[in-house]
Length: 355
Ligand SMILES: *Cc1c(COP(=O)(O)O)cnc(C)c1O
Image 1 (tube, protein in one colour):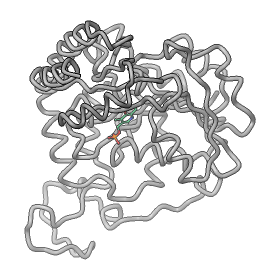
Image 2 (cartoon, helix red, strand yellow):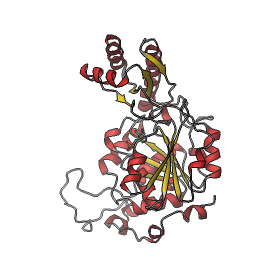
Image 3 (tube, helix red, strand yellow):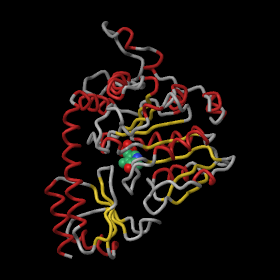
Image 4 (cartoon, protein in one colour):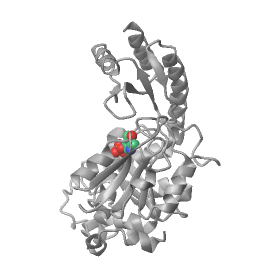
């Protein structure tokens, strides 16, 4: 596909949309950052609270920093109020009620919810019993399929999706392919290293590719609500056009920039989580009631356990909360367990042993 083919997928009224022009758009402070101005343009309260001014609607400083760390040009970066906002905006940008999106079962729940909120039809294809993509995945698309959401490493199964299978989809599908990499920092390879499993480096090759990442997992900033979408600059500028102007608060912009200034903190916590993942998987595997520990490239482990729904409730009585996925197809009798601290993981293991 070319970028012109991609632009034909955009809902026409959004291509034509004149976006809201904020006070901060009509007067760009950054060009005169050295000088002092009196700002009487945005109906802000002039008295200092630390947050009395509207934030930069383009998040320039934060994007510059993310651009350096990810090795992706700033004009290929969109920032959302969580990646959940990016998911919703992608659905809205491309799909109306005559369209459908295609996802796998199992996968992350928000793709379905965003489709339903926007009155967009949903198609699902089962992954195989090891949670891999099947050869007939694209057979489920039709001429109204606009967007495919794929999650790699997949939630709740924890596995990376096969590179060849994703390439095949990107090459053949005449629509948008979103690859959600919320857990990409847990695959065990340092970011930027050769052989790194992520898809950011393939953006130039595929104008129909959108990669999602988030600050909620490896970066430990779920409470701030900050997600990233990476794509062709023309897709990014369309997402920017339809987002709420001040979608990323000044507190979030400042605190995320602080976290990005010291990557080593994030790297150390990821390393500890990976070591605990190995230990937890091995200990879970020793339990008599656990019939399967699925391999994980993420910060959680999916296990199959006898009477999963009952075990879930018994764990809650012991004040340990895991995620019961046993009602999801392919996840029968499965629990999804987030890797915690060593102490938390021991509490879980002891609780399971006591059942
Ligand atoms: C946790 C998660 C996210 C993160 O969403 P945010 O809105 O950025 O917190 C996105 N995708 C998947 C698959 C997730 O599991």
